[in-house]
Amino acid sequence: MATRIALDGVGGQGVRVIAGVLGALLARMGKQVTVLFDYDSSVRGSMSDAFVIFDDAPIANPVVEEADIMLKLADKGHLRISGRKVVTDLGLGRSGDEQIPFAALGSEHLGKELFGNMIALGRLLRLAEIEFNDASIRESLPRRYQDENVAAIRYGYELTPEEIARLAEAAPPSRFEMNDAATAPHHRETGIGPGGAVAPIGEAAETG
Image (tube, rainbow, N blue to C red):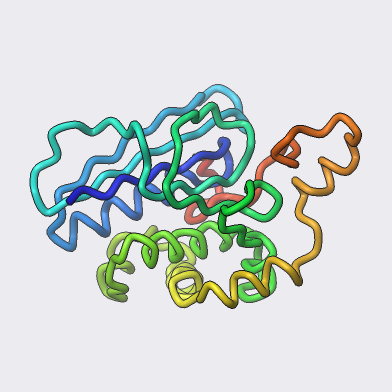
């Protein structure tokens, strides 16, 4: 059965990097894979979405209309599809969504917020029930910061629901929550503010 994954964010967060690494990894594992991107390349900080489908059988339709798993890294994306399982950066989720302070964890455990993207990828691998294969992951990653990226993916992969709940409760307010507080009482129902969550992984110049 096909698994459909949607990633919602803005340029500069590494959405295309996450989806590209995920697609390359799945292909190396022998899966049928489609990866689609929808982004505004003219402005950093504008919307950047990605869609990944994988299956053992050929994929007839690469369009994701409802995601099995959705990763939401910002609130500027125009993505309007629903997700059965939704994972967001802290301050972006609704009731029932899984919220993880990706940027804060990247800074705390690996020294830079940018590694939060690969922590998010690790969580996606776990939720999609994709085996953690160190060699295949390394082959799918950019050469720069490869050891750190693998460590970040492993950290995200090994997170448990109990740890996620504890981390979300203990984390300092995210930039989304701070922006929301600054604009109160005019905040939106979702309780999120503008801005990106984390910087891109891999080459520093990448803006996906």
